[in-house]
Image 1: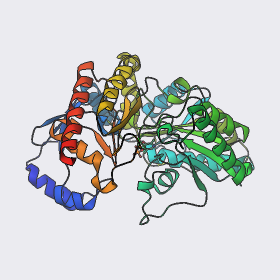
Image 2: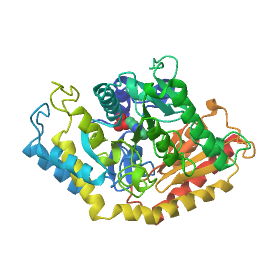
Image 3: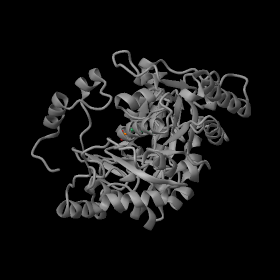
Amino acid sequence: MTTAYTTAELTKLDQQHFTHPWTVFDVFHQQGALPISRGDGCYIEDSNGRRYLDAVGGLWCTNIGLGRTEMADAIAQQCRELAFANPFVDMTNVPATLLAAKLAELAPGDLDHVIFTCGGSTAVDSSYRLIQYYQNCRGKPEKKHIISRKNSYHGSTYLSMSIGGKAGDHPPEFDFIRDTIHHISCPNYYRAPQGLNEAQYLQFLLDELEHTILRLGPDKVAAFYAEPVLGAGGVIVPPQGYHQGTFAICQKYDVLYVSDEVVTAFGRLGQWFASKDVFGFEPDIIIGAKGLTSGYQPLGACIYSDRIHQVISQPGHGRCFAHGFTYSGHPVACAAALKNIEIIQREQLLQRVQQLGPYFQQQMKTLEDLPIVGQVRGMQLMVCVENVRCKKTKQLFDEELDIGKRIADHAESLGLIVRPIVHLNVMSPPLTISRSQIDDIVATLRKAIELTINDLY
Ligand code: PLP
């Protein structure tokens, strides 16, 4: 958007009026936020005209890259034709119908039904409302408990944040649902209890899930929520066999498996969906958002199985599934998603990720020779650098040192955006990233870490 305001004026207005997600008030009051005004491909530009290589892909979302005229045209065309239609009860619109059918085609197994929302958090909320309704319909009203993992992130509504297990996101000033939500271990082998090999660690994790279900009572546990690869928790790829193992336990105890693929779907791991295509299991529900529109429009989807649908849609009980939003299946957002999927298919971006992902991981791994890089981990186009004070003991820096932010600030001054999460730096570039841009990311991040080391020692 063009504006007559100067950058300084914009920053001031922003500080006065925009409460950002995850505002750190003292820093924000001093520094304000960086105003981004343009974007093309893997680059963004601030309001002073400075360009940055955006290795975060917006926020794990700009999968096809920014500035696509084709996307702008599809969105404008849909706005002209039909900017809104009431989705309630017995009215629909063409893009929503076609998108639901497309998602049913792409999703694994019998996941043929879609509840549309405005983003990932509301899709997680919708999934739990669906689960409650389903369990009540089938005469299991006691099944109310949810199991999820420490360090997981599932969104920022009251419910989705309570399902999430990141300690830093649960400060005492906020309230959370505690009685029906239970967090088990994060499957992070790097921080596993000492002395366990990977196979023993896997068994420990599976036993923990099973014991938690048995402790609560299988008749009381409704669902297990898991990201295939934990994103905001630090790009944690569970040990081999974890997904099949947890899925089998859920099936054994009649617990629904919700695969939160807000980050991992739509190509980030080189497939449409990570659960079936990467990890080989078919969950009952998949949550999608972000890469569904590549961030061009806000949209989330709760994609659920025909088995659930058969139960909730049984005729003759006078049941009405009283759930949804004004903007469920918004025609402009759905038109954007359809065009986005078309582009991913036409440009063979999944195959591109399969080719370039291993190179990205391999090059990033070279940073492990730096004295504060404890581990570089990830899969395809998701990567995390874990910074430590001592590589041998894996001891972390004091939180107040904000090591991830220091590195990210240096990277930013060198023209690279990486995301700091306390002691971590995470990256998830657009699927269109090139080999030379990957080389740029690695070289610039190395420099940023070296500058940070110079500051510290
Ligand atoms: N689930 C996961 C795994 C996420 O990473 C996120 C956001 O980062 C969400 C849910 C919430 O999505 P949204 O921010 O669109 O509400």
